[in-house]
Length: 517
Ligand SMILES: [Zn+2]
Image 1 (tube, protein in one colour):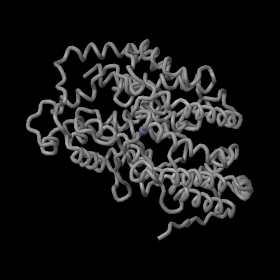
Image 2 (cartoon, rainbow, N blue to C red):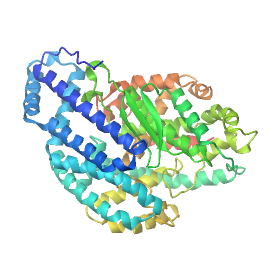
Image 3 (cartoon, rainbow, N blue to C red):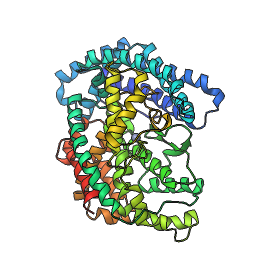
Image 4 (cartoon, rainbow, N blue to C red):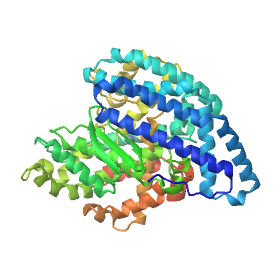
């Protein structure tokens, strides 16, 4: 049965635009699914054809968005709003604004640029897997130089269109619409100052406790995937409309509300917590995607999309770091592990020990393995490198030395090889410059949301300990997911929590968890 557009909106041009976006959305959904398949089921020999298919689809989507008919219809619809404002409710108004933004952001680029952008992203994803495996930085440099040149050219057009203060700000605003770089610097400088003070206090406090018992067991990868699946299903993920896969590439989530693909790192038999962390993170993304208002007339419409990467990462980090690192979560999990992994009274798998493993604070080289207190510094490093790189203050060849010196000065640790340092992330290889700050902004938002949720849901911690996540899910659905892009992220956050975005909530969350228990 095909989806229908039941809208009876009186503006003919707007109805036609909705139909256009429904068709564009169908193509984008196809591109999403074949991109996830690229990482999981695609035979290697299909690589060149797949690259061609994905890049063609992106060119085609661009052409459908920016054609002359669309421009005329947008003008007519905007005239209609002015003349008959009473006939436009807040959803239709937000939807039309989304259409205008999409048209404008595409109209500054050419079809060939969009094709090239998709090609770079998919070539880069595959190349990254190879160079990371070998730790071979120099083999990645030519591709990264091509990406940086391409990104700088795109950023010039974006900065002119948006009136951004710098090229880097124009890229950041792709991922975090409405935020300026000055505000992000202010927040990051506060976090830098306060977390640097907090770090030795937390480490000193933790050093006075008995030693953590390291995990030495072997954990069947199949049983790990069963656990991952069961947990995210309990959190509310609907496996009738989504699936969980493993990949040798970097983990990623994607798809549509009706076909949400979670792709996580292949399970490692020596440590089930890594695979679990990846599943909780991507699961948090997936819950948001599945909860978007994508039914009926809003299917594929701009107003039914997510609020950008700050809000998306906030949902992933809420599940992974905030909820998934409470003592109550481990009290729920621990008794269920013995039967699953065929262990008896393993002291590493007690609730208390698992909680201490996941909340152990110490500087590490790898971003994904970083604890909650030092995670920010990994983001701050990448943010500063990107800023200098896009503004032309440094070049690709300068990154390893910059990285090593910064890590040493800030956290007192140094990567011994490129795999431990500059090669660990896929983002730059796929052209995602301006994305990294979303993780820290998302962490801030997750802490802010949790503070509100704790007052709204009575006995929330008891519910987590019983594995009852229904009210948490209901709260997120009602306040975040179901709102789509009805209002900008900042406005939604203020509406839901009563406060504007601020690092204060993250700082007090970290103080509560790491300095006062
Ligand atoms: Zn994420």
